[in-house]
Image 1: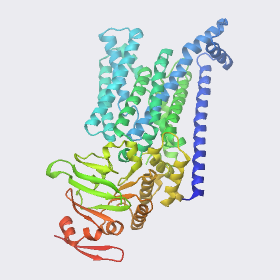
Image 2: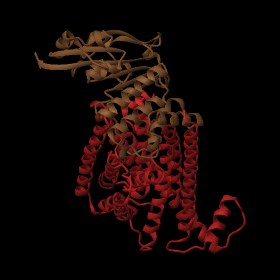
Image 3: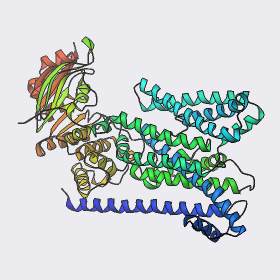
Image 4: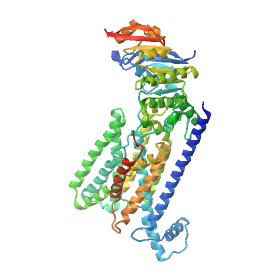
Length: 364
Length: 257
């Protein structure tokens, strides 16, 4: 045993550990600052001081009377911008976390909620609710329609994943089968969405196209309130599987001889990830790229250890989506651009840039 | 010598086409045992049954007197390590991180100084010290194989199983790896089980050979007892000339029969 070199290894590892924790802390700080800044800008600019005053007023349950100006600020901040910022962060975190875990369990850099069929399942669910809801059942979209869309999107997203998983199980549950089945199911549901578009009337078509482009304009505290616990619970359980995911990186056989129950772990992770991604997409519509890009960037800055990769992906995903949404609602204010367009428009070239630029290959 | 593995009447696959058809044997600690035999004779399957990667249809495997199925995943991972024929990582790990994964059965969430000390020890035992910070995709096949072995050793197993550990290596790395494994069986009293194709290397580095043919053990024992011209002819269908060399048996395959 070489004592000196071992001490060096311990030291290096501990230093690395501190560095990674600081990086996570820095990301969290950046996320909070950007969130607060995002609240100040928009169609109506609000001074940072006023933002702080309104938030403190609310948080402290103060019953001090407010001026008319303050009441207006309070409405804009508390009813419009803050829930939207929160939803953006949650959605980004959920999609990125889901992407990171999917890439891990499938051992494939291309895996994300899209490639596994969750997104297209949700799209089909939303489409059927919008098109059949307005034309066949004559539902008023604004009232019950919204709930129907969210529920339907969620249900079909889960159904897509169950179908994909069952196909893979039938064939022996190999990673490649999961991914291929995901792609196939995606096409199936996309065809369904196209059919819905073709047969829908103008009004429904407009709603459908809007939904498919993805956006956070419908952000309410109620959606934040539903998403937050789902995300927290899924993430906490997923973090417990971090070492199992690490072990799986050396292959299924090795993982099983390291004491990982691979098929059970894969099923639990897929269920949680589907839950998080499906509930997110149900509220936001299709927002592309965050789920795939955030884990890849995270791997480059913090490494492949899932104990760090998962929190890093979530923070970065939240940060990226927050930035994109802030751009989406301010660039052409008061007109809004669907955030899905922004994430893909900026995300794709950026991703290509890091693909070419990076020194170490991010996948073997 | 204490018995590590006790295998009784093992069957895998059904009927006369079964991959394993009634295997019974006992393996003691502190030795290198190689499983040899032609392609499709069931070598790797036997190893995978022992590593509990696949479940046999019939029969019983006992590890240190306790049924293999009675071990929990984590318990078993502390007793035995397995190195597959080849490993591929989707996302590149550093050598240290890859070896640290072998500590998984011993860790909950955090990494202790003891875990890191064992990782450091294993890394220097395999001569990987200069490559500690390198990424696996920057290494040669031989170096990667050593990392895979290091990962299994970090589990601190009493039984180490390797599926064709030398198949992708040049002759120098083959000798190095087999030398290390022999060393390990002597120093730590581990049972090392290998699947090997090269009969000369198997004879040279093993204490015992298991010669397999169509899912059954054709012969088992000391290399010179197992690798006779008759056995090679019966199992491989090859006429061979076997002589005692300076470092073990030399096998000259003459022609197929």
